Length: 312
Ligand SMILES: *[C@@H]1O[C@H](CO)[C@@H](O)[C@H](O)[C@H]1NC(C)=O
Ligand SMILES: *[C@@H]1O[C@H](CO)[C@@H](O)[C@H](O)[C@H]1NC(C)=O
Ligand SMILES: *[C@@H]1O[C@H](CO)[C@@H](O)[C@H](O)[C@H]1NC(C)=O
Ligand SMILES: *[C@@H]1O[C@H](CO)[C@@H](O)[C@H](O)[C@H]1NC(C)=O
Image (cartoon, rainbow, N blue to C red; front, side):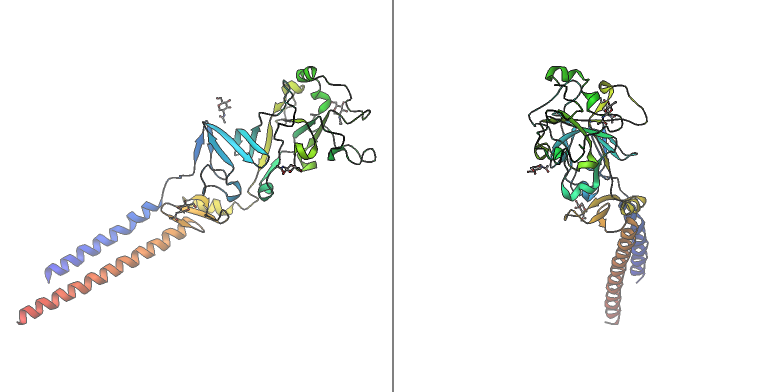
């Protein structure tokens, strides 16, 4: 009898010790955060499926320490991710710059898949300069009744771009801004005005893209930054992730690629880690109680056997 009581007392002390240690297990390290070369990758971006925001899945790939951004128009090298300003700087190897003009429609342009279009938009101060577009291009349809869509964006445009050394090699015919014998050799547009820089659809031979890091006004096209500057956004539904991270969770999504999940160590929650800890602590407490009851029943049996032995 005394042994049984001692056993039960030890057992219940032991079981109360189990609960705090298992809660500690649930506070874990963020397994979704990673690096590619010297670029930090974290929410809403990720390299692994199941990590980050579902609108950003199957987007970034790290190949030999080079971070690639993959969308329907092609693959771009990521030069920088600016988390504070929520923007990305991309580079397309087939994009024309001030030093080279790449023709033959080899450039990617910039067109994003419909399902994720809402998450990405080239910045308002990013200029796309379309080169060698055919007279049949949708850009020039309706002329001369309609105005040409070509304009200067943030002080950057084709008139200045023609001053680049690359044009002296290609041989700019000097058609320029005047719509005389044919369409202009270069037409500068903002992404906003045409929504997709699709070279085959626009029937253009090539393109260049530049952005200005406002409010610095740079002198001349040789000083422009060539690349595509893209704003990203999770469309204001960031509350889920903020609540998850506030409870030491890591933001991700389920196998369906749609449902957001909060990863809390060995468990996933559809809200945040507080709810997981509470319910799993309750579950553990429940199982401890079950064990306690079982132990109690066993000890009762032992006690009864010993009483029976005594009576015999
Ligand atoms: C990464 O390193 C390259 C040089 O290797 C540098 O030009 C670039 O600015 C760096 N990027 C970041 C985000 O630190
Ligand atoms: C939690 O979700 C992630 C991402 O979908 C998945 O990889 C992991 O297996 C899930 N863990 C559990 C315990 O379901
Ligand atoms: C670009 O336009 C062509 C022709 O209209 C189309 O077949 C192709 O799917 C478009 N590409 C993208 C990335 O939208
Ligand atoms: C763009 O600005 C230049 C001067 O920097 C001007 O000559 C040209 O006409 C402008 N082009 C358009 C399309 O407004």
